[in-house]
Structures are given as structure tokens and as C-alpha cells.
Image (spheres, helix red, strand yellow):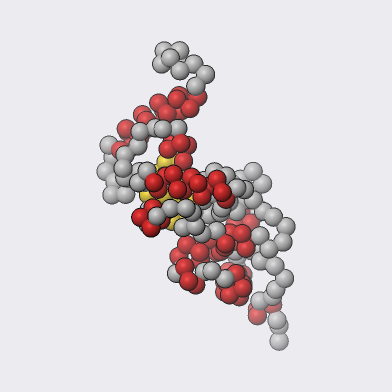
Amino acid sequence: MKEKNITGDYNRLEGIYITKVLDIVSSLPTKNGYLVWQEVFDNGVAIKNDTIVHVWKDRQDPINFKRELAKVTAAGFNTLLSSCWYLNDIAYGDDWYRYYQCDPHDFNGTDTQKNLIIGGEACMWGRYVDGTNVIPRTWPRASTVAEKLWSAAERTNSTTEAAPRLEEHRCRLLDRGFEVEPFGPSFCKSDITA
């Protein structure tokens, strides 16, 4: 760090490292550019126009990640959101509602900016997850994110209407042999024996 005259400036150190990595990666053929975490953008690292910026921070503070979406898209970058879809952040009760209510286009920006949102990602980190519980912890809650991202907006604005669809999907997963957590109090038709 002394040689680069950046002693103690770890953001600049990271920027130098990321720039070298991006130089290597950008020399490889790709039709979609490359993806970086939001810190690369936030720290002012020079990135190419075809870069996708992954907004992931501020899971507990929608105001901040919405502000970040506005900044990144205002700079003209395609953006991927995961801030509101960390499945390892489990809350007591029906926590799937908060995943379902997150809308990646719900930020203060123009239509042009909102068109730069190319999708989202459900994330699962392993602090409290291992091979014994990764499937039940992930499913069916990831289904809420999938429906939100893969369905028309007018179909995904009501948790009341979504609940039976998502519960039916949970039952399909169980019927196929997956051990998945419940969304809440419910049952599957396969639970009823004749």
C-alpha cells in the first residue's frame, strides 16, 4: 500500500484489485458484460458501460437500497437486486410476505432507469445453514421471489391471491420428495389419507 501511496485506504486498495480483475475478465468473450457487487460502483472503480451492478446491501433498510438502485441506474448501468431477498434472514411467522412485497422497480427513477433493472436474485448465506437444512430453509420461500420476478406485475401485487398459489407449489415440492418448510398453518391434499 505504501508503494501505491494509499496506506490505510482499503477502498482504493480494493479498487486497484478489482480494476486488475476486471481488465482480465473484460478481455474474455462475453455477450452480457460482467457483474460486480455494488461496492465496485460505490467506490468509484472505473467500469465499462456493459457492466451489471448487483445491489445487495441494506437488506433491513429499503430506503437505502432503493436509493442505491436510483444511483446505479441513473449512471446507466443494468442492475440486479438481491437486497430484499436474503432467505437466511428468517423472521418468526409469515416472513414470505416481505419477500413477495419487494418490487425491484419501486424506487425513485425514470422509466428509462427502471428498464435497466434486469432482475433479481434470492440469496442464501451459510452462517446458520448447512447440508442438513439448506433445502428446507430455501424452499418454498424462494418460490415467492421466483413468482415475483418471473410473473407479470399485475399478477404479483396481492399476497392474498399469491398465498394459495405458493402453498400449492409447496405441496408439489413435498409430493416430489423435497423436505420444505411450511409457509404457515396449512395442509396439502396428500396429507389427507382415505
